[in-house]
Length: 167
Image 1 (cartoon, rainbow, N blue to C red):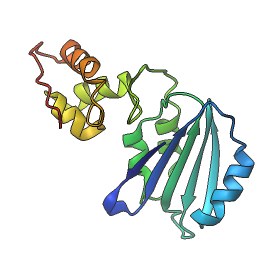
Image 2 (cartoon, one colour):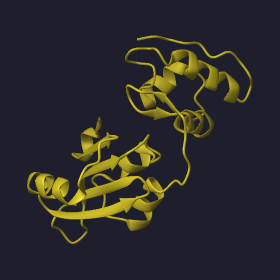
Image 3 (cartoon, rainbow, N blue to C red):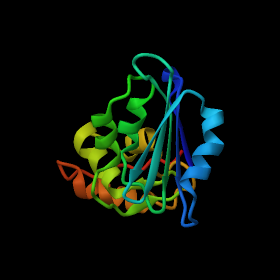
Image 4 (cartoon, one colour):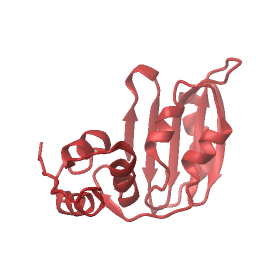
């Protein structure tokens, strides 16, 4: 399970990856009472996403629960950006339906190869420390650091060596 606390937005993003089948209806009944507000449940290719929205005119997103039966494709940054904002179906679809599968690199924080490459290319990260800060990959047990460094070195635009900093 991965839980992302967004701090200022006051919401949380829960992500569960499991090979054990979970009954969506039972799951949503059990969590619905705790989440309160209006619930939106959307099927995805490998599971579902439940959004808890405030009972206001804008349907402000309070929390997100994502359940998948495989490694997450959804972009956690895009999902996190939905919290505390008025509900937007287009943003939810963009965040959850990437249509691509990516190799899991960091099992502690469920970080995929695609997420690492995207962070290097779009955020202009130049060190593994920056990747660790944003994605948390390699900041727990450290077993994925060689793979993170390899990806970083392959995708760094100037082919400079990227320093590994272990916390």
